[in-house]
Image 1 (cartoon, rainbow, N blue to C red):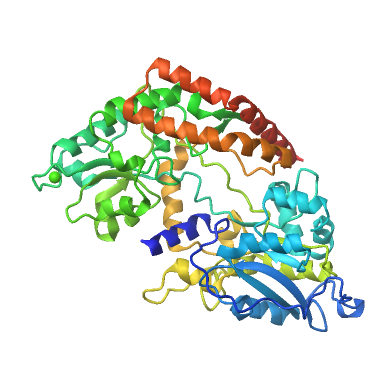
Image 2: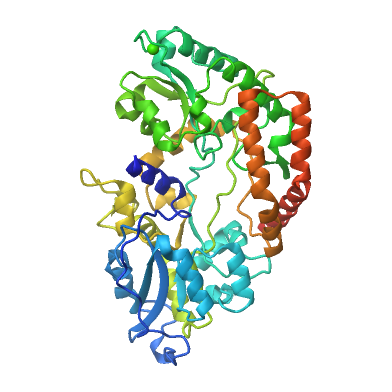
Length: 545
Ligand SMILES: [Ca+2]
């Protein structure tokens, strides 16, 4: 289960989530030998090549701090970094901190003022990028990019949206991008139904929400697994959890929901959870589903292992569920008996599916500190990782280990050894720090992982035609905006989610609803939405800039 979960995470959220577990003892504490900062270690002009390789004629050291996944070796032991050192003549004194300890150690380093030359996979928040940028702890990078980073410069010229996304509201770039533009997270909620049971009970594949409800009711009452027991679970999910919630089904009422309850239509930010469509959906889920016993009551409390186990009972008991991949819940043998449910038409003829928020490039892959005496060399070194073939190898692993090049020059996945999981192997061979792999690169430079290819096909065939056009992007907020969001949003969302579960289980009448809406407004909803709207307008302006 743990293994399966890791693969999921690495596929969906690889760039933003570091896989973590209990940390090894790190013997490498880094070293001051190569420390450039303030040590008069500046590379002589005659040794520095402004273009071509190596970057320097005489080998130099840079000190770089980076978190490291549990299964990853020290970075100088990684094949891809050995190749990079050979090509560039730049040796990195890595201070690899186990990712579980990283946030704390990073903060200690920054507080001590004993800074490395750079942070790789820096995990600087937007707040930190701006505050450390404005107080001079880290340096603005846009001029260095212009002069010393041809790969990155080309990318940002071709994709002004990426440039806008990594540019702080004050106009500076403090952190470099990392991104896999695979578009796999657009709809996280894959809705699955047992087609063997539909066939057995003589039911057609549901097109409407009511037909779906009829199927769930038949699953509950007609013993489709044929064991004489009423052990069927018509529908199970995990309330308000990524890739496991019924948020997608709200679209049948005209307004899809998502984990933030925040969608965008025609450039306007809408808070879903106080809208009439949302109320109608909750009424339906209560009256048609919960009251008839069609929802697994544990949908509001279970954890992922409990949930996943329900697909693997000796007699099949699961009628319908939500998960990013069919097999992971019911196992590969049983998967053929299940199929994805496209968006359903609701009682008033509406049909749509939500588009997940966020996405877009990370902007904290790499920061350079003010202690760095060789920012030009450093920028040239990191720019190697924005060359598309190198970016792919940084993200997934090197040619000869993970990939081979086919006749067209595309990197194709080599078969993995028996019993090796992609997610775990990737931790060992790929630092997954900097580099951007765009949509176009997935066509010409590198293949997606096989399971990612399947997911992409499913999205294109089943969901994309009905998907909302806009989402709320990953916006670079101002520090004062982040303060306001942090003051209002966590408590507000917590209350809304508790009420959502309560309304589904207990029902919703007009008095309860009005009092709920008033409470949400009293908690600062309008101020929060105005902020999100202002920030979105600013973002769009910058994208067009
Ligand atoms: Ca049964």
